[in-house]
Length: 140
Image (cartoon, rainbow, N blue to C red):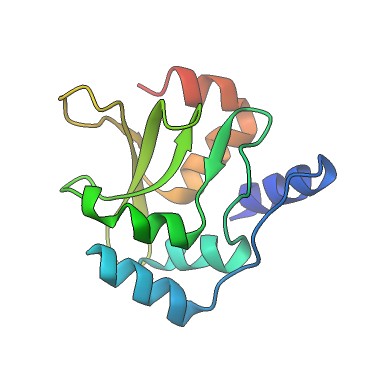
């Protein structure tokens, strides 16, 4: 995920604290505990960056696995929560498509099915690098 690498470097340059990457075993165990079989791109994500201490300048935050685990009871047919925008104004769900990729949905907690934001995590981060404000504020 080249866009993720770009973002990690951007966050580091801006002093955004990131948690250290997780081992595949920890990623798999946390995902399975939350009710999903982790796809390769989800493993790659958390093997690259372990989540963020605070939101970035766009007010988006990738959660560390401890938060994913804490909120596992909120998983549903649209996936597991893994990040938020504006300190939980709305959240993002990751749902495996297959063994290689996971889709990303945005959940507004408005009683409606969460809309698909990106067909893969790579696409999500490509959109984030290209135009984060549009992705976060106009995801539909």
